[in-house]
Image (tube, rainbow, N blue to C red; front, side, top):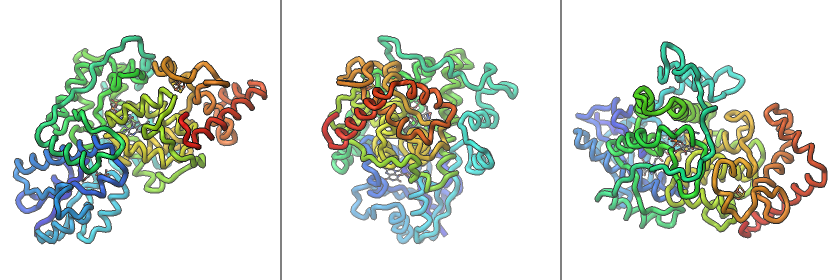
Length: 508
Ligand code: FAD
Ligand code: DLZ
Ligand code: SF4
């Protein structure tokens, strides 16, 4: 009997498991643009267009390679609107009695496939360097799941940047050489841009029509939409930007939206690039003397360390992880995240570039929007859903650990040993945002005081009982305790007043 082979929008890899398990001569590939996937959060139009265009081109490549493909376009009148619906429809048409699928990256969709009336055989997605079993082995019986130790094990296991069993250069981590404040006039060339072809234009028209009201501008659209283009993008980045990646990894500059970041997340997560090939390209650049070790090690750590670790956390902890809220935060996400007016230059800059590019680099996500949401006590699930909607590289398997864990501390300290919080000083040191802000980063209280300064102390005071025993936070509490009482009262009152203005919907 024939079978269906399901390929999801983020499974666009020719070596994907379900294809390897299938038989070209008798099985039928199913790919579908469906309303359920395109609207379970209000995705950025660029993200939807990227995936639909890349899906259409991948389907064509499979056909060229001899596969029979049933591809459903979003506007096909027969479209049932969901992945299980499409499987059922094609099973009826073809007489297929079983579906071969690669495990999706979200529990929501895994559950939907498990409930599908046509039996679905789910194979583990082996495009990752750590299998579920390998991560669980590492995590089981450990008191803490710190990324750095996981990363060392990944280096040993993969042999990436290793020399005779030792880390290249003698150290595992070169971050002490990284993360310099940006000098004036830093000028990165930015990612390679691709002109839309007829397929992309057709998708852009569809997305404009159906998702034009979502947060985010669709044009200009320049993402790569095939594996070949994504590889050109990678080679261009290795040549032009990798050497400076480490030095300015934490820098933020107005108008420099990508700096030396690789913008590979969206391609890796959709399957257009493979993590191993990306790491190999970076390692080769170091071996060729083109890029320094601090840049290459720092970059490789993001991929075989953080990326694999976040996936491990998601699958290890299960669906309930997403609903954790250890700090009991429940404030609604303010309008400024959707482009509402704000005087906070750092927020408006990050939100505006997110609207236009469906992209912000890590430190903008972590230390501006994430830090703000945590300090202001935004409900973790609300900010999580915002990131899911806003970024072209967003999927739950990678997002959950970053939002619920790393930035919101809502998992109570599984991912982070202390909350990632900072006052305005950090943003001022690493960016040029404060120079053109209506608030003053130097003012700690009073008229025009930077909200990060007020909210930082207010957060620490609010959560004192939880954090004061944490040795990594003792210094912060000592500083707070040294302030005289009037000053502490002023800070807390001003923070409360500022937050109530935020809640009233007044621009702040
Ligand atoms: P680069 O800075 O060039 O880094 C290279 C690659 O390393 C990235 O492409 C990514 O694959 C990987 N990487 C780096 N940091 C992380 C990390 N913390 N977790 C997982 N992988 C990492 N990444 C996503 O892929 N999807 C998301 O939805 C996502 N949401 C995030 C939300 C928050 C609040 C935070 C703090 C981080 C999030 N990240 C997410 C991680 C990281 O910010 C992005 O991977 C990165 O900014 C993507 O840009 P880039 O490709 O230019 O990355
Ligand atoms: C993100 C996304 C979107 C916007 N649209 C589709 C789609 O129409 N069809 C599809 O197969 N996949 C889509 N995806 C990706 C899925 O949501 C993704 O496979 C799951 O979230 C699991 O990671
Ligand atoms: Fe952001 Fe404060 Fe700097 Fe303004 S002064 S850009 S609000 S950190």
